[in-house]
Image (cartoon, rainbow, N blue to C red; front, side, top):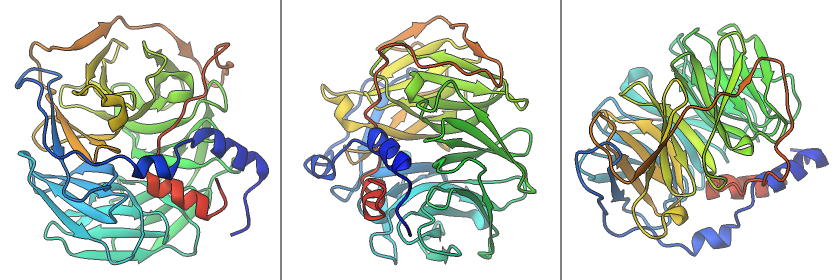
Length: 385
């Protein structure tokens, strides 16, 4: 693949700042730690089996377990509600699995960034891989559309891909060059919505392949996670220090987070109807439809070093998340009750009616993103770092 434009390389260098050496110097967790039990916000942690596993994507499986893409270990892990871990190695070496979703055939489907493949694993651990039409596609986010096909982002090809359960692939180019499409989710309107991390936009693609793009406040918004929720699609925008919501008509509202070091990353809808999100600084956040934010600390004196990463609602109606550097998964009590160790803030009122744009606040810090080490290495190998 030819080297990308210098502007894209500069943007990626600003966005991706973690060195692989620093990541590899950190050991995985060795024992679960628990903070209380049964109250909203209580966190339990479960270590994975393989050291340096660097868990990235996580999803609820059809078998009442959660499934995890182990970016560093080149494995897919199954974790039960009580923390029992089973790991399945992938056939392709160094495939760097990134994201995972429950899909057709009661199987789990996941992206393999380096070999440009979509993987499928049954609940018994049988793996099948489907190559994409060409090299350097860099598939990252993945979801299931209303048409029962797999939809995924291709950051290297600057496109959205669609794959049927038998492996037939269609690709749709994104209008904005070098947009770096990242995560993708199915919306209540039946379309697929995705984040354009470098372009600072939210994209929408219909089931027929028509793409519409909605710019955020600036091209340093760095949106990443996205999920359907009350009133539209909810997304994270770390460059703005905010969680945002976009309606099907493209109206955008931002909800700023209280701490400047939040490093907000991924988001999901919880069983309580609120949106839950990860803060790489060592917290799990919850935001109501009106924008009231509650934050829960991940236990331990060095919680920020664990890097709360991807997040999902589990089959047990709790919130599950990956701890990228701790080599563990965490579970947060999500159902109503008296919480502890949290701070609740009132809903802010900040609205960006599309297509309004604004610049980032004066002195706003460029976030030091911590991405999965496989993605870091993959980008370096392709000349993107």
